[in-house]
Length: 259
Image (cartoon, rainbow, N blue to C red; front, side):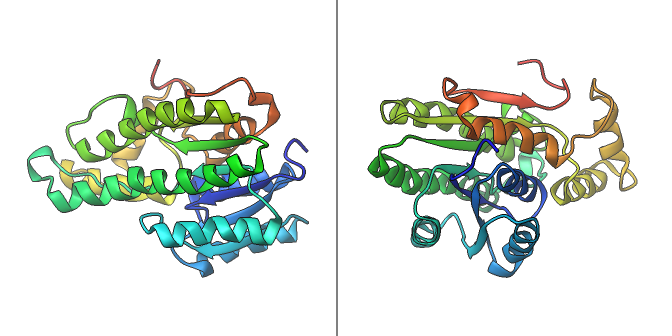
């Protein structure tokens, strides 16, 4: 188990990619803090981990709130004795035509996807620096951060921001041996993409399920991405196998985007 003795935080850890990442890190030996908007949602993942013999706890966290973020980090330290890994998975997205994008839409996506990532990374990095043992920060970007899309301007921009923030944070923390990398998934079989499909279907006047079918049909590897596909890469980046990797954004999208 590559992460034996490590302590990890996974934001947005109650479902989808966050849940899969939390389960995989626990299977690799890490004690995991499941952070999500409600403790009840996170507790379900905690129960899955403990049923498999792992260690986990849940904490209610809105990543936009610095006090709640600090409490999340304090929970990791007070419960498990430290912090080695942060996975910034919490994120939101809306499908909105360019001309209909409002300030409220823009602020919502940037507050969660970017500002929340900043607060979590700052709080975690301070602990990692104080410990003096390095650490790993893994950010969830998106294929959408690699290009613009007519109906997804604010979300694409926020995920491009995540990629750029990853580079900046990696450079700032390199002297402390804290590796900072990102993962850019594609079309992932999660509740988030079910909602995306519904929004695209409404805008394009298509049956529900057709936008998702078309998106999957474009994937060179011929299948929809599973949360576990992302979790495997997250576990790698969290491990000592990735000690010489930093400032990178790794595409995990079935070959759907070449760079």
